[in-house]
Length: 149
Image 1 (cartoon, rainbow, N blue to C red):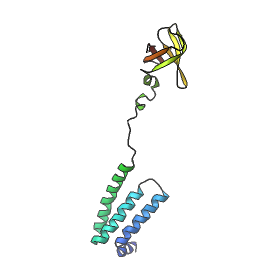
Image 2 (image 1 turned 90 degrees about the vertical axis):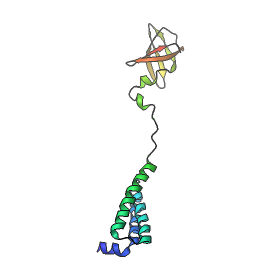
Image 3 (image 1 turned 45 degrees about the vertical axis):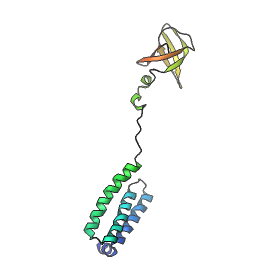
């Protein structure tokens, strides 16, 4: 019964299917059904122009569906930008190497502190007064080794 109705409608069946799939996209957004709906609409137009058999129109729909989904994914997928911070994930100290900071506490007997954003880091290096500028040269565990900028 459904097959008979589908065959009687001809190209309109594809157009109705395309509109239904676009409607499903509104109910369950995910940017997937819209591509299938577009493929069904285009299949309906092609079927209306050329009067395809149901097998040929199903094949056209299958090819257009795969193509539309692939093109749609390429268009909607965010462009991947190189994340320079990702390489230092869970190794924050290494991302500080080469940067210059001001001593928060003086370096006495080889140990002091610097402020980096909202955190305080233990530093080692030559004795210096508070407020002196120092450059991070390497990381040893959770301690930063500093030298003259």
